[in-house]
Length: 74
Image (cartoon, rainbow, N blue to C red; front, side):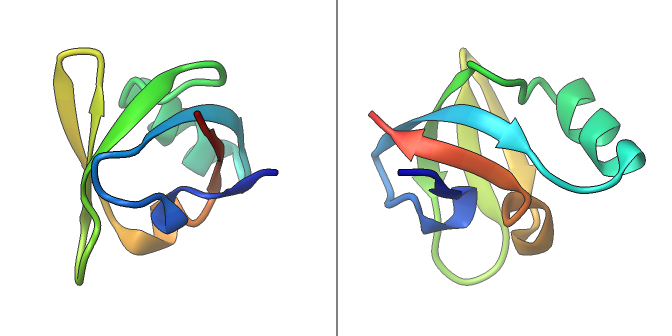
């Protein structure tokens, strides 16, 4: 079942299924290294921005941006 990235719990892994939004938003997210099929680990998901780990890189995403990234927990 797909859900927005900001619903993933801390320490959980998820696979990116799609990125919703306009062309510029999708391009920006892809340039950050978040692409369809990538596996991420949620490092921080409390109040404020989220921190996710993609490979060996940690990325900070705002909640509105994370809402557009659809994932499935693995």
